[in-house]
Length: 112
Image (cartoon, rainbow, N blue to C red; front, top):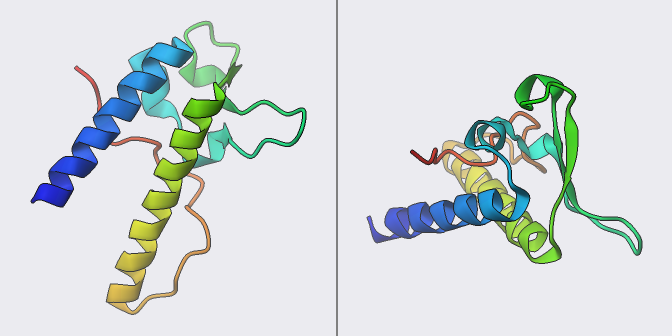
């Protein structure tokens, strides 16, 4: 129970941090999946989230830059999600996934 509550608290904090630092609307944030994040940055690349046109208010789509600290937090969040998925697969005797499925939602918590 405590682990579940800690997970929920961490997710909520990251949801609000992402909303504040990106100016995304809650519906836009809710539409983001693991495949829409570019978190691996090279020497000159900037981490970003790619909004689909259908999910963005203006209907054009957008690349939303992510601050380095937020990108790192999201990278760790997705790594933890992959770890949980791998533990689930191991417990059920299924194959271990090497990465998250592209359609995996970034967050399950929806701010009110």
